[in-house]
Length: 68
Image 1 (cartoon, rainbow, N blue to C red):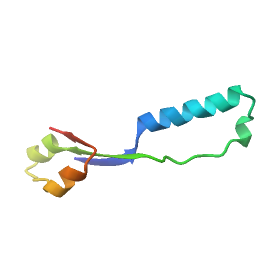
Image 2: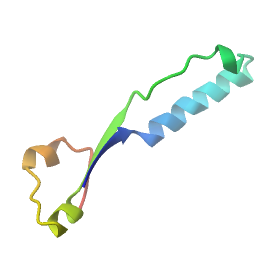
Image 3: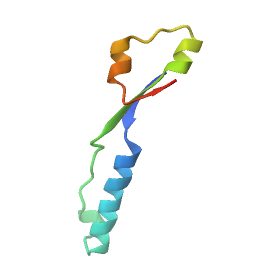
Image 4: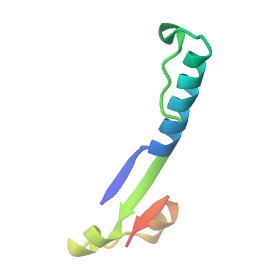
């Protein structure tokens, strides 16, 4: 019903920046390991309703995406 995790699009952009640095001559072993910087909060309201759970409006307002 609720998911919070790294944003996939942001990770692809960061991976592209790494590839660019490697193509420009950087050694992959010298590149720092990066943690995700952007996270997404998704609420599946359809599943919650099917289980009889009413999501508070504060949770729905803070979600990045609400699945109806």
